[in-house]
Length: 608
Image 1: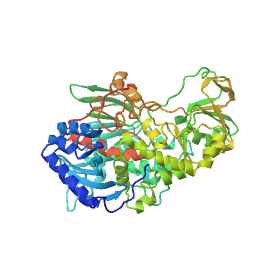
Image 2: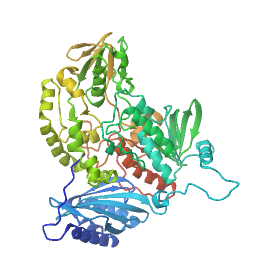
Image 3: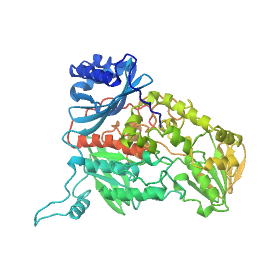
Image 4: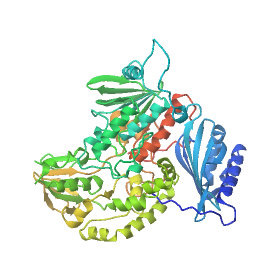
């Protein structure tokens, strides 16, 4: 969701971009080979950034300024032992910034990098571990043969081997990793671990993979486009719809789980987990289709959803209300509510979708807006916000999904908002009439505290926005009634706001969001561990619901935590796809006994 720079051909000093990058890489590698951290850091701009995805730090971390880079290199350079820096395609230049794709090796892995170079030095550097040397995935030229030619009386067929694995894993043979949560995040990580040869088991309470999507309200579709949503290894086909209906997502996840041979236990609930510091082993109690089973993995991954546990308000009168009430995550769809009076508490994505579906089914709908909401029309977001990276236009320009992921990852969170603000300024100008209609209807709009729009709100707090696919017009037209304020109480047949306004209701839907993911850790492991690892998501922007200090990366996501052997994995389909690689490689290294000294382990500033 950021604009890319258009390429030019030469730099002001007459040297072409390729030569300037070549010179910088040569000097950088020379400094690193000499173990001269200060000289290497001096090749960065004073305000430069280095974002490392596992390659140097066995962590996901951003180093800011020369001082931060020197500190990391002093600790990690000898062990990382980087070498062989080179460009992987011709460098380009625009607006005084040279952009280059680079590659190199460390002592244990192969790395892809993205460099932005200015006259002041390296402005941004991304280093992304892509594979471990000698432990590569069996793909491409290393793909398995799949058949054993010749005669063999002891032959074990593919299906027989799969049956043996399914019978033994979790019983006579323990998984190295247990992934709690079999939605898109758990499935993507399960696929990575399968390809990496890490014994892992994904468990989920639903009957079938994909039921997390099938069980949602019937009108739900992905709001992100298909190019943004591919899963690892197996992209959606070229005739796949731009916005996938939720049941189609569910079917794809179920198919994907089978085709990618992901060890997956459905109808399985994790009831508790505890960690033995002496043995370095988890004891995970689960119920599989009613049968108690004890698993003993070394690593435990909570892939229970970026949004965490549903936040359900505790309001006076909830026990008196005679109608139906539920959280948006439990909303069954609109069919049973034709002719009913529905009050939806909230004004973000789920609230708008549910209001629109209820209106379509003939319900009388009121949305209660408790605070301002950022709205962006889907078409404008796809064109202006995402089109340069995730679109058919981007594909035609040679921007693969993997390349788009790395371009987006190359922009440090500290400065990302600066590049988002012009995007949303352009959207606001393009759709000025649309926003004027909403404001005339009384809808309270915002663009983020600094005008940086949707994706920064998503990263900072995971809430406060709606990608409009039609519901906003219903609000602007008055088809969906709008009320403002906090809810004071419920009566037998109404929602009462803090100003005394009564909203008659047969149905109340609490589209009131979710808590932090470490709430699941509190439930399964204990509050002490939840507080030890701290809040998940947000990076300390100092904006609403994302208190400082600035931490540089999303808290606890896809990287080591303060609790040994405990990891968090989640996010949208894009993040589940992209970051599952780095989490998978961290787990693979530990499984193979590769030393993984973590640099910059996150401090905990916010327990919850």
